[in-house]
Image (cartoon, rainbow, N blue to C red):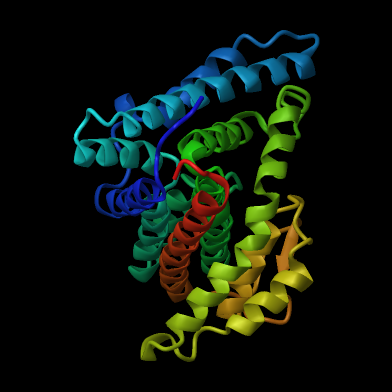
Length: 331
């Protein structure tokens, strides 16, 4: 497969996708490709046999990844069709790329919980939180609710924002395809990548694949988090609230303390940057020397997510420019 897409095309699509995400958020389920991928996963999951579940899980994952790749191929072909006006090509490709990441959705999750806590409605905050995390939220304290929101925001900064953008940039003209391959793998992990008896074998391949694909972005995340916290310190309102050096130090110290090989790094970086303690009871503690977060830290984390996302887009645009000029001679 040969595309004549230029670096300018891809960078324009990247910036447009980011703007579309911030302005419009998520589309309706009926026209949401990730929902289509999720429905296909559910189709296979509900037909899983009682025997040879690991082999079936590999087959299920490969089928879903192939389906996602086909969506990416369609978007790439549209972008590469010169008979279509450039504005339409860019908008369509940007919309497809936007589907693979979700900055506004991640920020909205924190905003909803923050609003409930700011109003003194702890029960409401627990209910809102239960929509975004798998842990039992019914008895969490205000500090534990705040911690859980920041944990999921920082963890999903990698899985839901940086990783798809990283693979989009890394694979140049094949970037939309790569982003969809990653998104399918991530969705598989979220739906079947559990360690309970029901999914241990069925989701083994999906969970391992997700770990592999997030390995580099999880560690690379320290760069945009460090830069973002450094820049936010220049804003008077945040000058005493953020410590970029501590973000890197705590990520190095506590990044391996979570069960996941990847999620600890961005979570510890956020904890260090905000000088707080993040804790999932009986599972892990990040930043043991720091105080527990308060609800206002959720707002700070949202600003850090947005700033880190902006830096990530700029980093990926730079990657695209270098990769396209270095490795794709048809540019």
